[in-house]
Length: 387
Image (cartoon, rainbow, N blue to C red; front, side):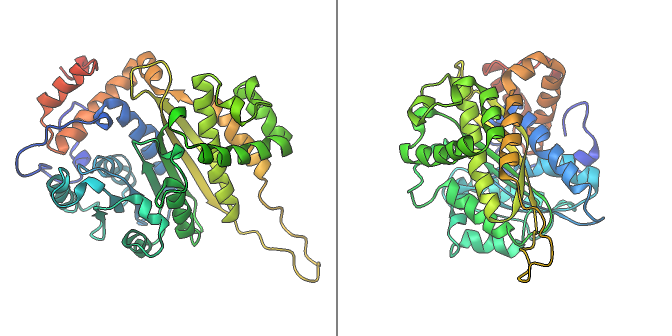
């Protein structure tokens, strides 16, 4: 791999990690170094913390949207599997990998190469399918996901404004998340859930927003601690009705949208007897404008097994989940939501690290290094650290 911090281990244990055929030259927004900061800080590091408590030799199971170049898989292997001496089994969804689609050939070659690594388990696979099919228990997607078991890390890394889509459509993120929690309900160990979605108030379906807001409003009315936490996000949210919150400042709406999503997931957790904790949250800008418009969350889900009271009433039941406290903690945590663009400007050393790591990943996936650096320069990225 390329970069002064490279080591042989970072190359998935292979002497050479090159794709066969003409190199791809189409770069996307998720190829920016900023996204590598998300991969490392929001995905790899929390996953590394999670698996440190696993028995020796227990593999890591990952479900996500790795893209036809499998950058996310490469990152998890390099940053977690190598350092923790664990193997990875993954199930990926890549819609662009259907026969005849631009990503088909790249995915086939990427998967073939990655599967040759001793750190990647042979049962790993990528489906040329929509992850939203996880909402359908009769789908191929659900069947394949169930076959691999439960997952240590589930990653909905979406580019679209998924959280605001009309919930009545046949396939949507809410149905898919419901399917994931159904699948994970047989799991006793904690697991991670990452969620990335565009946030645009104009794209929010009225009915979807209304249903999310109703959960938020119920908490606000019934839980004083939650109401105080919401007020700390912004006083205007203390009593604003549904119409009122849609008119708040862009940054306030962004945090509110993140809270609405977390509240819905927390409600899902309460049905499956799980605690939910927001580990970190960040936002960045897809378009050059003042407001954040891409949300990235990492949550930790902890299954709980509280027995109901015995019929005779002789045993003192354990205290159940405190939804009020969990929701309040999430709201407080969102006060520390990171503006990733601003953070990287203020921390040039981390920006340089992200750049070097991105170049390493891209070259490992056989993107031409010079073309990639030229593209970064065109996008206004300072590449002096690579020169």
